[in-house]
Length: 228
Image 1 (cartoon, rainbow, N blue to C red):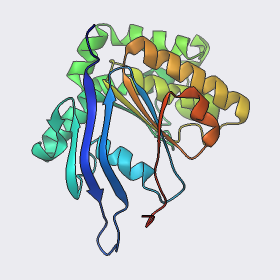
Image 2: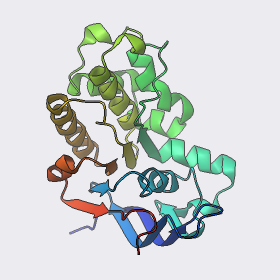
Image 3: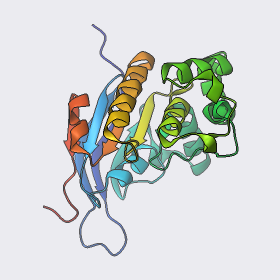
Image 4: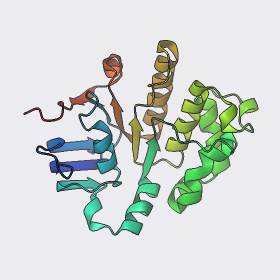
């Protein structure tokens, strides 16, 4: 049996901001395989969003190694880091970061404009965008509308489709259900996990909501800042 490919590898990580007496993050070893879904929990200030920024190469670790698909973020110059991220990481932001004046369909297609690799993996980007939006229960009548005209729940699903298009190896989700009520939260989680399974991507999902733990087989809890 072929072992799943390693997508994210973290070793000996220590992250401390200037002026801090203690490390914000201490992770001796963490790995995420293709198709694996990992839940990261922790209270406010425990370093959850910082961990995501390190995993995506937005930040470089104060100490230790963070690699994506075997490539250390530290070994890439800034411009190559941006392209490596665009090619291999789908990011689902807490604040969504949709472009409000663009249509739903154009928002989903944005990663294919910045990454030739993801556009090529789609083969037909417009077709895959429509397939993702349909799978995430967004009616075709909504696709031409500006993103700002959608409800929060609908915008969440647009953001999920944008993160998934082009089959990135790693999807990072930063508190994506924080603005949803219980019914919409559960519906969104089911749709997101189903689409991640279909694409075979690894999912790194951060939340403070302990009720979401039942959706994940693997979980880590970050201690509060300064906890030893």
